[in-house]
Image (cartoon, rainbow, N blue to C red):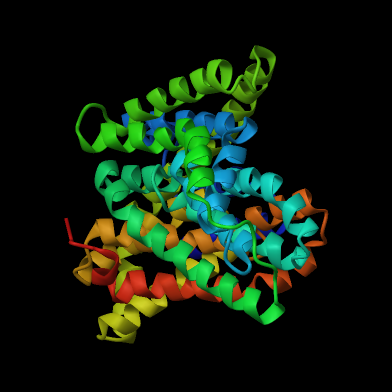
Length: 420
């Protein structure tokens, strides 16, 4: 029955059936064939989305959209440029730094890529940067959007694994920072190799002025994360605070959005949320089915029989995560893999919060690996470059991010992992 279920799932995926329906249809048929009452399906669907923590998802999506559509992204790019733009290839470093700033606001890889790319691409072209390399760097920087808190995938993982969202957020900073530093190092090396120009001279006055302009946007993660870690509000409440703050800034401070535009953003965010929630609901049925058939335990035993060395087993797990990210988008892959792999890593004695960081960082790399590479598609649409050119240019950045993932797996102490 398990082979039938996964066989149908991959068949539907190859036929181009949307992921939620591919999961639902394959699971429904397998349950019907095994004689399980189909009332279980609706019960598990509702149970899968009946979590207060999931309230944060639509709110963080809306807050990110509000910030991305307004002037916040432009102000953040200007501030990043005043800090590091003086270096050779400084605009490349600005791309990454602006991505990290925006990641701390949006919680979304695609939103981060779109916001930074639309602000920086014209300037990168004007300064003579290789368009494909610039676009690929912006796409790679977008992966940090789901690692630095607030992070929608971390919320999904926390719900599935029954872990603390706050702990995941607290431990997500340093892996995100390591990803950013790794991309910056590669960008600087390429800048010297290609003799990119130096940018604007370093000026304390410019830094101060751009910081003042960007301060409203920079306050967003301070309010969100400060409120969560101080215990003033929960992650779900923090998401609502973020929406209200983003709306006030857009309407009354920068005055870059009007009510009709906000209405359109509400509709778009609702549609995005509906897709995610449907995938979560369908995946809850899949998780229940696999658990009742004891599939995760069988997979754990099969993998453990291959090797007794935990380092080798973790390398296999990393390979599975990266391969899954190539073919399935981040949220769906997270929902499918977590119930299967979590029992295995628990047997290895790995903390579930640590594993949450591993799987989120690993699947974020899937955002730049075709065919399901949302960040590359966004970068391609912004730059009007063929996807093939950007895909070739992304390789060094992708290898750098895989190196950071291996650090998160094998040397977590370097990233500040304390185990609590």
